[in-house]
Image (cartoon, rainbow, N blue to C red):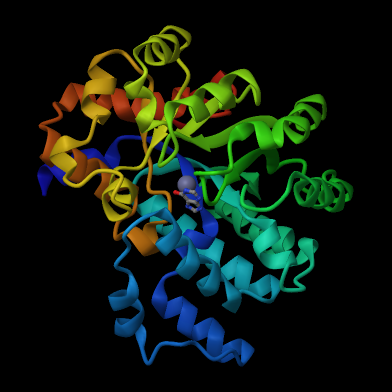
Length: 330
Ligand code: HPA
Ligand code: ZN
């Protein structure tokens, strides 16, 4: 417990977190009642029992279905407020939060409903918890680039209203068969608009997708990126350029990216000099928030206290906070 308290007290940033993936079964049921939506589960336990995934797609199917209970501004507020409280309790001082607008607009939810609810929770966490956070609008890669452009066009009129929070864009959903090059034009446009760029790559997809995210999309960080180690030249470049990798160990375990945490390459990547960070991805679905990811990794991979300090420091270094903002949180 002493060790756990020490880990909790380390100031951490969470950089790879999907807000829809923080929907705990209890809140899913509460929102389904509030909105008169019938869930295909008898109770909370039945939901948890359904969370046995074989790969990314088997998770995404349930994750998108679960998000169907999110309807009102209050729902998005409740979702984000619960996450921020939980992350704060884990020693997270700064969170860069992805959200999937297309999952909601496809159901007829207005984009401003999503932004407004999330923003109210993030601003409240800043004022009441002293916790900083921001938003990364994530495009769904199984949809077309035109669909992503339509989403961007719909979101841009809101940019001023949420200028304190909406700082960047990301790319998530089904990776294989949806290479980064499919989104070359929209990434170029978002770069022009001054957004920070991240993308999922090298989770299930091959190292070529990490290469494409770096060279074609010109991202500042790679979400996951664990398959980069299959291409030694790519890995050397990631180390030399100190491109952050937002690794999510419990996610990788639940989705079968690794079969045993003791075989996870995050310790090897870290010891080779890569800028590795630890994150929770979709904690309500994968059975652990950020501190659980630190603890499970430390135990499985014999991480030293110095290595844990490095992982926590890396998370702040890899964040989009300006150096002055980072120091203010320590
Ligand atoms: N990978 C791809 N898409 C996602 C993920 C993930 O880990 N989580 C939520 N959407
Ligand atoms: Zn993710």
